[in-house]
Length: 236
Image 1: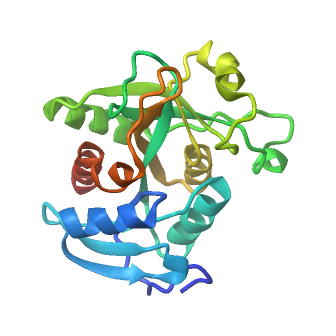
Image 2 (image 1 turned 90 degrees about the vertical axis):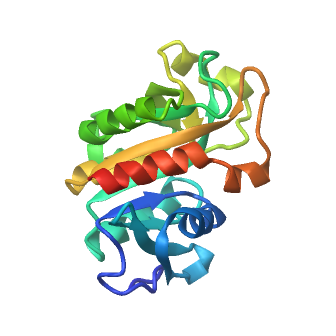
């Protein structure tokens, strides 16, 4: 147990899906997992473990933003022995070729924040996904005829960006596909602790066109992302 988690050692599988939203964790567990059991309820950041395709899999909400995610990821790895971490979240599209409801496989995650600045000093660390997870996710998406895009994303600290879309122009000029709020911390922590990580995100809104899905749909209708992530988890 930790200050943020009342699960016991062994309650989590080695592979954990990480939505930000606790209600999305609940939806994934109740909709897709067999024999799902709630293992964490602290601060209503809900965690569950069950089976999918005969493989034990967990899902744990992380809250929004890198500092919140970092708490759960560090504790999942250090206290509960988790080895594989798959973020399942939403993101804002920054490229016209990526449409609302398309999936983004984050190859790398640029970072607006400075939470790791003291760790790397003069260096600029490039957080990246685990290639084996990325390749398998792409193959599974092709098998299921799911539209996906692989490339760089950015983890922002400001949901309400004062400069709007203009703030991202230097990034879009270098091919960044989408903005979310957690992947850079996930990839950095996983790299330091020799674990595997991948962010699979659904485009919930496009910052270029203004297209979007509503809050209820974000919680419960992201079926392609959930099924793909669970099949990936079951294949590890």
